[in-house]
Length: 442
Image (tube, rainbow, N blue to C red):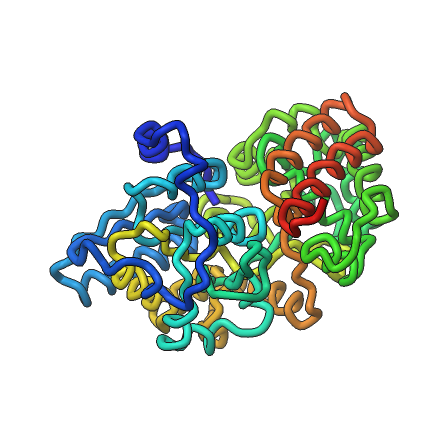
């Protein structure tokens, strides 16, 4: 999830008409890509993804592209590296047009893939998932993010996306800095706070994070989950019941994060920092800990000189995480059959093993072949979460536009321009409005 904006998205948006709402169709009730028109281009495959070449996913996708080229020697493969942020903000506008990729990596959840699926902008893949056996490789909770109903709610309905790896939020720590400070890996939230106080007392800001993008919201969600159970997650993510934004789960989390800011455990300039700034701060040894996702693993192995380790957020039975980002086929894609072939290759043993060897948490790989100790540690942490049914998805998933809401509210918290109660009010209103829109309730 490396985020640098590209000109391709901007150009695509500029070429679209201003009046877009009339162009957006309703969700399809078809069961596969045959619901759309036949392929209009069998000689070109255009792929959009936002993984860096040094990440596990980037290495795996490059392997998949090589295999695809061998199997389709007459096909030109065009790969465009987009950014998570650009696609997150502009996918609906871009996919309404005709100049779209054939297959695209996209974020999963109600507010992202679900929204596009319900608007008819993605191709349903149920038939091909069955015929190619994807439904046998991607099973259990991993299917949750692949399926969306006619309202765009995840977990049931048609297949609209295909995940081929897992991901979760972990705590990365600098072993040298821990040893120099005389602290151990914490196993409770109280111990975690003691470790942070030790570093702060030594003049070191203990947590690398970022408020202008996703990291700070995920840190907050870890604190929410520290006080939550599965029923809370089902209520918040799947709308099983109403959510009390001033209940103990969110109140305690927001007050704790607010106190961490006051105590200097989170720097006050974090409000203006991006995820890249956070990662660099941890990699260069400025901060001893970083709470972020498994998507950083490959880069840390490549760039971090000091010895580092990982541990699950202490005291939590639930962790932010899910299947990884999904491959989707836009409704207006010209080469849907080629796109399906490419997706199938990403689930092949060869590509899945590249993921496994590089810490990519494959859904169909052979973990027993992993030899690197850091990769084994990452994979074991993820397996521990799965064994405990501990995947709790991500805080921005439930409703459209909630990502930007989270970013804005927690920037205000870090800036100390809003109290915890005001932040919770700022989260509650758009959540409930978005939920009503999704469910069609007044």
